[in-house]
Length: 222
Image (cartoon, rainbow, N blue to C red; front, side, top):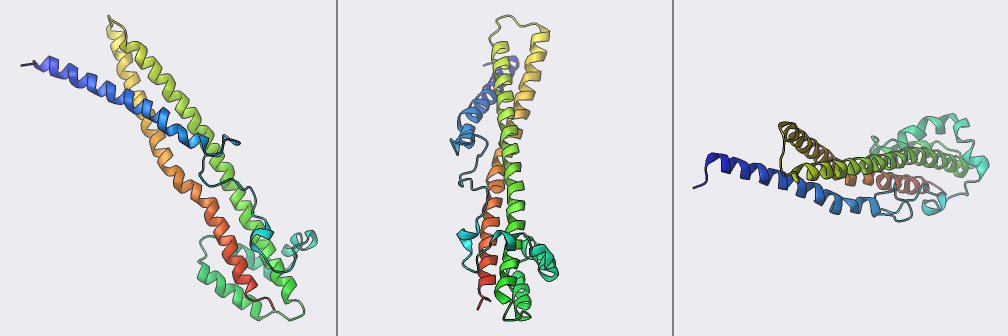
């Protein structure tokens, strides 16, 4: 029967093989995140990158000319309401109630223009938040790429140490340190990659919100 020393050596070898396999799998299968859009290596999401939600995609009300887009803040009531409608913490049911209350107090002669002003403000606010989130996703991607490169470097260093026929105490200490580093790097990369799907949903949710708000406002156009 194998002695305790042999069993311990086998367990250590299995541990090293598991770490090396996990790192290899990370580099092989984790790389799919970085090829979601061949034209933009910093965009990892399955969803197509659309930098800006255009009014034409979701709005069928009065045309949003540049003059109207640039003056919505001058309307005090609109400027107060826009942040509440654009904020994700405001439930859509509450947003619809706020829009209905605003629309009910409008004069017929200015109803279309002021509702268009309201939508212009909401769209601008949502687009601003969405661009910030997308820029954050791209920074996230670059950091993941850097971490994947660090994993590769640590794995190669560990592989070189394991190939040494005669290892000194210093080499053994280095091996243990590399194993710990590789395990930590791989775990952090895995956890961040698992979070990526949630992160990628945020721009889509904002697009859906913009569409829902546009529809709610258009319901009050005459």
